[in-house]
Amino acid sequence: AREALSDGAWVLRGFALDHAESLLQEVDAITRAAPFRHLVTPGGFRMSVAMTNCGRLGWVSDRRGYRYDARDPETGHSWPVMPESFLKLATRAAEEAGYQGFAPDACLINRYQSGSRLSLHQDRDEARLEAPIVSVSLGVPATFLWGELERGGRSQRVGLQHGDVVVWGGPSRMRFHGIAPLKSAWHPATGEFRVNLTFRCAG
Ligand code: MD3
Ligand code: FE
Image (cartoon, rainbow, N blue to C red; front, side, top):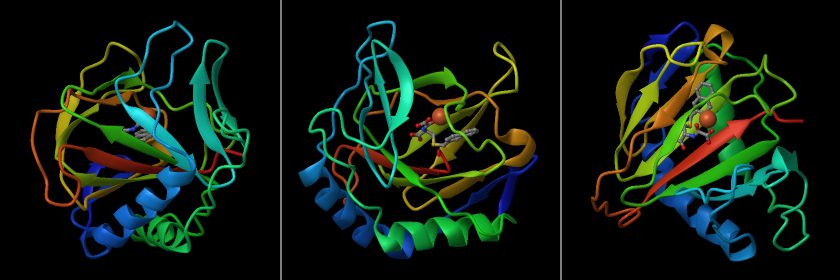
């Protein structure tokens, strides 16, 4: 069952529930090769969300800017391969929301702890803005902030729980969005953390 969030954006409640344990095992394996780290923004601030990536391209930030890179700047190695199970889930979710043939080349893995937040922003570093984005929420619940196409517009608050999947595309692709400061909580699958997988066509 899909729930419309706005034009082209859909929430699939519990879509990943049956796969949560195995997705998190894959995340553990990925972070053994490419550990979570707190990136620095071009303005010099340390991000409160810890990040890593899998897939051909990974999103990175440093004093020089934001970009996608085929290599992990910490190790100089390629990012870990995107597990087949990640790709399958993301493609099925996109299909459920009406986007056929979604084949992401990048999966950003975000880890939130109590107080971590992502302020309102647009995702504009991808080469293919016509492709949707698929996100999978795991662990501690969060409040997603859903803004407009221009900065400073109103924003709605949407609760995202363990196993929820959201597909964002079409006219909603360039909306401002963010995550409110995570409330301190504990989830049996992730402990004190929220883990979010974001699948994108970046290259
Ligand atoms: C809506 N991450 O990493 S995922 C991000 O939960 C990011 O970690 C949030 O925003 C998180 O950039 C939200 C969902 C998401 C990603 C991209 C979008 C929502 C989006 C692009 C356009 C509209
Ligand atoms: Fe984003």
